[in-house]
Image (cartoon, rainbow, N blue to C red; front, side, top):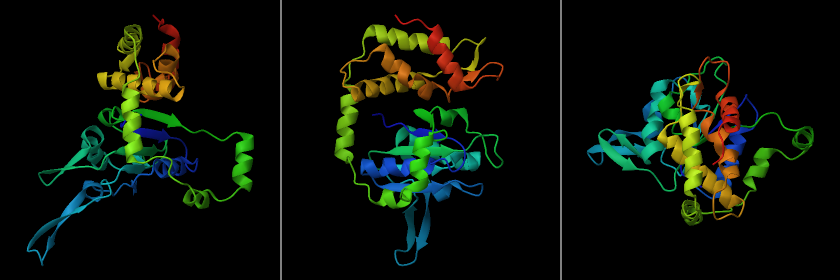
Length: 273
């Protein structure tokens, strides 16, 4: 379980926000939702100092970023200036406001939802921010039986209020330490490096995977191994998380192929040691 953020992309009203709420509730962490809009300012996210007459000085009022789980809802509807307010928080778990650096609560997670870039009123996320997201997942339309349950079942917002936490901060830290202890052999590291190197071929990709992506791929594979009750990483663990880790970071040459599709094709072309 890595502390890096996660991005959820899909069409409107597909359940992205509900999923983020469920994750925060089951993790048992303090939760803030930030609705990203075109008029959002960095101060609306980070906080601002306001003059206090009784104290005869300025008092800092923390913004919604000061929570353990942040839902950046429809993050690509805000301007790049507002999006940039998340960069330091996502990378270093701290923010610098008015010249003073303030630590964020631990553990700290950013879950972002975004709408497809072809929709009106969206701004593309810069590569520097995309690279800070550990994974991007897509929900898609529900299967027929699952949709029937949605149509006839209880309101999901009412069900959300009934959820009980399954973890707490101490439990999350323990899982993070356990993930980091999952063994990954040199041969598996060779495989990861081969995948990284394959994305850095200019003839196929205009933007390949960074070292940060490689670290995320290893952590994701270790977490997948732990979820499957294994104490060491196998190639299938790397393959299981590769598209989610790499898809939003890759820029295929020519632009006729999505990053996720290119990631799947890459798995078929890179040999397992």
